[in-house]
Length: 328
Image (cartoon, rainbow, N blue to C red; front, side, top):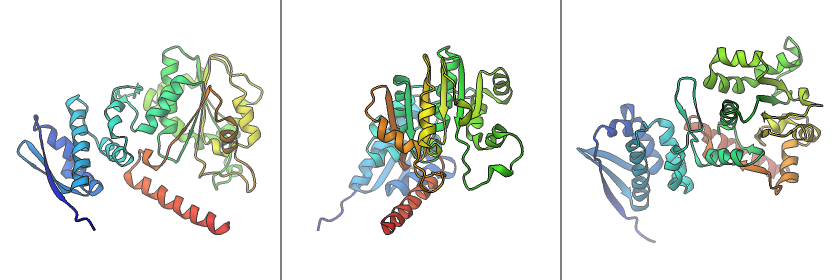
């Protein structure tokens, strides 16, 4: 049995003002780094000292150097950046960390730059740039809907498309739509809240409302797509796991000239009646390998919500896998 080798590594800091940013308010970032990397981190003057077992210290040193490089480029270090760096380190993709910040996808209503927050999101953005049809498959919290809306808005602003169409199937997630007032669109609107939130974050409420009134942005249930050919449009289908095979085929064949189509879904959150095959799962089997269609898969490492969300998803995945094995 090999004895564990302890090590202490020092990093010289050229600008002391970066330390409060790196360590966070009340050392919140510091505690996250120590817990995730299993090291002890302290600062002495212009030096950061990392102590622990040798592999952990080496990993922590690489990660902190990436964060310092980020700060040197004038980008403030937030909790999201710390979480992203930790996850990319766990995944072995830390070398791509700085690359995430080199491309600005768009800007928020407040003027804040919007960038990919992890390697999975970066792959998703590149796929949308290069392909006409992109499937984003993965758990909640990976930023699929938000990024899709950001890219749709940028395409509209740059004159690449004339309108944005956002849709989702009218399937209940344990709730009964029949008891809600209004027509089908009014019943489905509350379920499209993530789409509205993304639009408001980029355009603001008033401008989003004006664009919707003019028909430049259309938000509608999937049933409203039937019989149409959608040209010069950026079309996003959300919650695609709840489409039937027929609905998915209907939607994909709406694609017209000058259009892009994004299909987002989470295969673990299917709310279709028992025995019904998800159009998303069917499409993945049938369409993989077609040159103009890309499939980007997200996992728990790509979750950009509070760090505990990734652990919650993992816990449920383990439970579902155990249940599935027992049923077999």
